[in-house]
Length: 360
Image 1 (cartoon, rainbow, N blue to C red):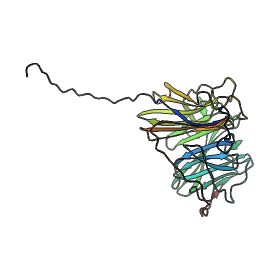
Image 2 (image 1 turned 120 degrees about the vertical axis):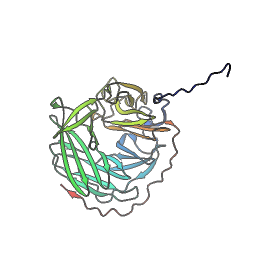
Image 3 (image 1 turned 90 degrees about the horizontal axis):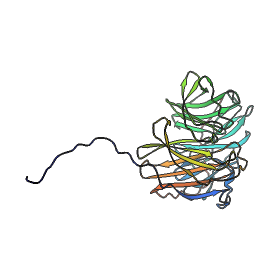
Image 4 (image 1 turned 135 degrees about the vertical axis):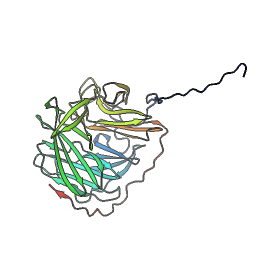
């Protein structure tokens, strides 16, 4: 037609979403805010924690599992400890959740018994999942615990330890009801990859392990025999902090780390969120530090750099993030439209599972 033109243009490629932004604080109970006991419990007594289904499961005062409403920070009560939770250097030290099952461990120094406990749900009594006095060369086990796999069919429970000369991954695996132990030395260029007294290990079965310690950067390792060799590392600034959580949001890979950004060691704990631009952390983009002013300007006794971060996201519409530093506080952040959750208080305990543990 006169004066008009039409054509078809084919465009190929993939959209790149802008970086995560507008991460907003929803509650903050910390030494910095001066409200450490404002929720009816002492937030400085939370050693480690885990998120699941609208709740935070917190190791509290090394003697209880305190359950919080994750979106409000209010207490929902404590898990029943039954008659099996006992022993160790510390009675309780870390807690994680997998497939709805809660697992907690004690802290065991050499010569003491490492004990792992499981709850099938919030209302159950715990049972002894696994126990051993074999430290496999570690000075102590239990500071940091991570779970992977499937709780019922193929469960991986992973710990790390730097005894001053060797850094080890110690992994207990339950496959089809049978337990086994795997031990790997963490090395870089044939030498020990020193992580310090607090070491956290994340298993990715069949692929490798992330290893992070208070004296090291988070490091991706792959196995060669009994050695876990360090490949890429994540530059988190100062070395302190044992927490590395990767997540995907709108097609981009991120990581959240606990870092200590103060001028003095072990001060100004924060959650640092970055984008992994290259897939191996060789190039990253900083999203932010949360809280921007940290949880505390004081050490508050946390020279072990104990603490963690947790992430919950659907990958597209919302993000929830929590940061904890032992003795210094805990805070909660969101992005997007977060579905409201209203978890029930912890009720009376049901009888424990009839599971019979294997003792190594």
